[in-house]
Each structure stands twice: as C-alpha cells, then as structure tokens.
Image (cartoon, rainbow, N blue to C red; front, side, top):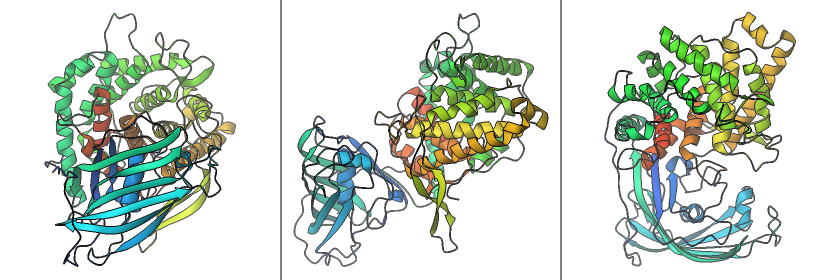
Length: 579
C-alpha cells in the first residue's frame, strides 16, 4: 500500500511590473494548461475587511485544475457561503486560449441564478470585459471589469435588492505554467448588510502538481509518513481515551503495526480500568471498536482497499480478550440509545444524558456496529432496524430532482440521466425540514450510515434477519433505506466539493473529507458524479499539509490520514453515481 516520493512545492508571488506587449511570442497561449492533477492555493495579501455584505473575505482560496475547463470556467458550483476570493478568481480565470499577441479583448457572462446562495450578494447576471494589458516574460496581465445588476431589481432568494456591482482588477496569467498567477483590484457593490467598497489582492502561494496518478500516489505515501511522524511528536494529545482510540485506529489503518511504540501507547490508553465512566462518550466506545478490528485486518485486504477494490474474503480472528473488549463497547453503545429515539445516539451515558441525538454520534455508532458484525460479535436485536428508520429524521424531506451521472459513453463523454431520487441532504440535528440545514459532512455521515446498515443486514443469515425484521416488513425497509442513501448521494453529487465542507461555513473540513472517503468506499465507487473523489481529495490534502507534517488538531490529522490511507472497508451495496 505504501508508495514513496517527495512532493514538489512551488511558490509564486504576485510582484512584477508590466508593459505593453511587443513582439510577443505567438506560441504563448492563455489557457489552463497545467496537469489535471494540480491544486493551487491563493492567499489574500491585502487585509480582509470586516464582513459588511453576504460575502466572506477568506484569507485562503483553494482551486483544483480538475474543476476548471480549458477556458477557466468552473465545473463545480461555488461554495454555499459565497466568498469574495472565490468569485474574483472565477472571473479572472476565464481565458480564451488564443495567442497572447493576438488576443486583444473578449467578454463573458456569469449567470448566478443557478446558485441560490450567491444571490444574497451578487446580481443575477454579471458581465465581464477582458483586455490584454501587458506582458513580461511568461506573465501576461489582463485588465478585467465586471459589472451587474439584478434583472428585476430584487434579490428573489432573500427578497432584498442587490445593488449594482463593479469589480475592476488586473489578473496575471502565467503562460508557461498554465495557471492564474494572481489578481489585484477593487470590489464595489451593495449586499445584504450594506455597501461594499474594498481593495483586494490574491497571490498564488503554493502549488501541488503531478504529471500522472503514479506520481501523486508516491507523494501521498510521503505525506502519510510525515503525518504519522507529526502524530508521534504530539503523543500528549491522545492521553484521553477517546482521542487515544482515534489515534490507535489511525496508526493501524495507516500501516503501523500493533507492536509499534506509538500504536501500542495509543492502544494502552484506550481504556482506563476503574474510572467512574469507562467510556468517555459514544465516540470513544465506537473508535475503540474500530481500533480493535483494525488490529486484525490483513495486509492483503489493505492493499485491495487502497486500490479502491472490494476485498475478497473478510476474516477477523480476535483474541478472547479483544472479543470481550469489543462486546463490552457494543453493549455500552446499545445502552446509549436515546430513550425516545431508539437507534439514534448522543454522547452516551453520563456525558450525553438528556442531550438529543445527533447524526455525528449516530454515524460512529453505525461504524462500530458494522465493525463488530465483521468480527462476528453479536449485535443487539432491533438496533439496525431502528437506526434505519430513525435516520430519516436527519434528512431533508424534499429536494430538487437532478440530472445525475450514469456513466461514460463509448466516446468517453459523461452520460447523464434524470433519476427520481431527489437531492436530499442530512443535518446534524433531527427534523431538518427545509433546505438550509443540510451540509456535506453530515450528508456523508447519513449516507454512509444507511449503506452500512444494509451491509450488516445482508451479511446476516436468514434466521438473524427475521429476528431483526419480520418478512412482511423487510423488503419495504430495505427499499426505503436504499432510496434514502441514493438521495443522499444525489446531494453529494449536486453539491460536490473537496475545497470546503459544502453548506458549512464554520469548517469541519477534514471530518467532511473522511465522510467522503467512507461514502466512496461504501458505495463503492471511484467517482462521485464526474469527479474522481480520491485523487482530488488527496491533492487538496497535500496542499493543506503543514510544515510539521500534520493538518492542525490531532483529530484533523487523523481524519486526513484516514482519507489518504483509504481506511474504510467497502460494503456490498452500490448507489447511483458515476462509474
């Protein structure tokens, strides 16, 4: 599974003067010519103002080449929480592909009506004019002016007027590298919270670019090694049982054996005998079950899963001590079900007493139940059935029908088809109701939980299935759970991103990517819609890895490593998505 290569990092800063082009080389062509496996980080060099409109003034913007057409148009929907940098880079990146010396000017139109969240801050239609201003070496400056007003004078999404918008900027394109180098300009307009009149400057700060998948895979192995070393250096961060369980699971799934010094340390800290609360919370007990199972996953199975394959035989032969520990944790999870919502979970006995169930804890309970089932640990009767029935409380009741990717034609084009499964996401708390409560990490959690329940149910012999569901109810239950999973996948496809946690401005980005990895494994599929989710997510993580090898907090580093290591065992069920 492990592959090695040091990934190159390139630094480009926006600091050069330009002159009117003279005798420019006709072979210098504006266009996103960098390899598809390229990720770019743009940083706001000018100070971000206090938010006075619906726009966020993000310090960092992540752009993947795979999300752009050759002309620079974006192939994924802009983020749910509209960002100034996202939009100016989107406008600046539209290029024609013509020779620099011959491309005098062009224009483009941006229709915002298909992105309801953007309507809070942008006019319906934005028109942009482009003119080549100058060139120096491989860098070409383009003068851009974008203007727009609402077509009907009102913002129909928020029922508020969106005032005139003017963006003026110089966009610098690196012809040799084939990517946008930076932008500098001003933004004037009126948004939900008042007028906006700010200057901005975004510069390309970091690049990860690979010629092919093999090179990316080797860089991923280097990143995993560095990430594990970062965890080693922060052993104090997993002194508590719940963090120790997550760390042990991550070490084991990243190729570290149980006898490794740091893996053994994390395993030893998972349980503290004699404590008033043996398990700190549901997360703790569930992560412990995952770590215990991971001790018995064969190298061959890991190699198959790392390649995106469904493993042949799944066999776990636990010691009696580990069997007893896993059964005890499953019993705790079963006792922690919400009294008025069987099959759903909050933080567990003690710490979670009286708290309403949430999807995050419920998802970890589902992961633990599936791991226990693979280890032939008995699961209490009814919990799978009840969770399948209860998860619908976290899912949107309605959603738009979408054209979803069916597969590829013989010529390689993407074939889309309108399916009856509406795009219905999941929220953290129950009864999402409308469309505003759903976001990426929770939709991934809900979708993968449903697929896990189907997998557990199908793995049982007929007699055990009958204990869980009478024959008269079984088919209807399976159809309902499968349909809700398909609708969750439709939402992930329709709102796809590996740059942010869609629908969640506050973040939880690494938790979202780990949810995406589980969905990809449980589906199982290499594509979500048109997007090769693993390669794109790995690129985004390589770009975000810090100098010490980690990704911030311990749990964020764990989630990043679990994604990169493709830690999840695939299920038997498939959902509709690009193949």
